[in-house]
Image 1 (cartoon, rainbow, N blue to C red):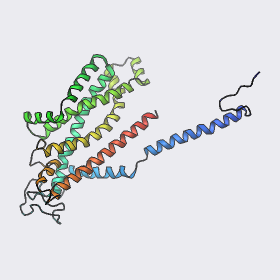
Image 2 (cartoon, rainbow, N blue to C red; image 1 turned 45 degrees about the vertical axis):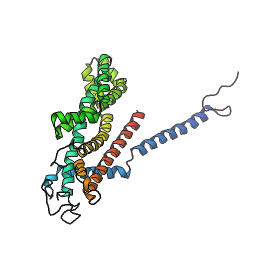
Image 3 (spheres, rainbow, N blue to C red; image 1 turned 120 degrees about the horizontal axis):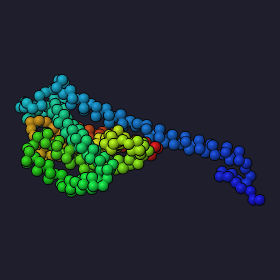
Image 4 (cartoon, rainbow, N blue to C red; image 1 turned 90 degrees about the vertical axis):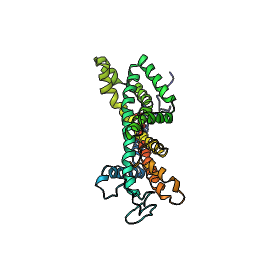
Length: 310
């Protein structure tokens, strides 16, 4: 009768030797997987730098009225095109207004547009996307058609039409950007819902007799929030740039309310002689958006690592 061997055995090894060989291999694989997860979760120095910068910008914007700043809307004709001085740390603009004060107050407008537009778009798009992914059928087809129509419409033309009809204001800008972001959040939340809906706890809730909207609210939504939030964090940076671009074109927040885009636009005619008027707000916007994108991208990668290890 020919000899048979088990996996991990050779003709010269015994079953005990094969088990002894397989155990260290499994242990080494588990240790390697744990090390990979630990490396993925270890935050680099850039993570803390990005949070420190973003925290400083947000705190200064929130507590701007309590800080010893110049009035950002009152001209000072003795400081027109003024350079860096102990009284004006970042100089003055074309009307002598303090650049540092206007940058800090401008952060309030830029961050408000980015955060509020993303929250509104994520809320509406997330709910519609979960409904499309869970119910499917006609609901999914109708929402897919609406999404394609909105995505096919040029965003800049939509904002111009909205400003022309409703006027240029902070509220109208937030509403316009939120509408443009809804289709993207619909697609993202729908894709996440299709994945989550196949898991055991959702199937168990269905078998238990839970109503669809209860399943969406209690079982699906908590698992869809993280990918939507990670993408939404990146979208905040995008909308800050969009707001700056629209303000630069005269379609954003109207003066005298300071905004980073409006400050950059205000110094474009004197860019060669007095570059600090546009350079400082542009640098602050760049560093803020870079920090937001870095944090959002790393959050997305951590979510993907956790998903792959479930």
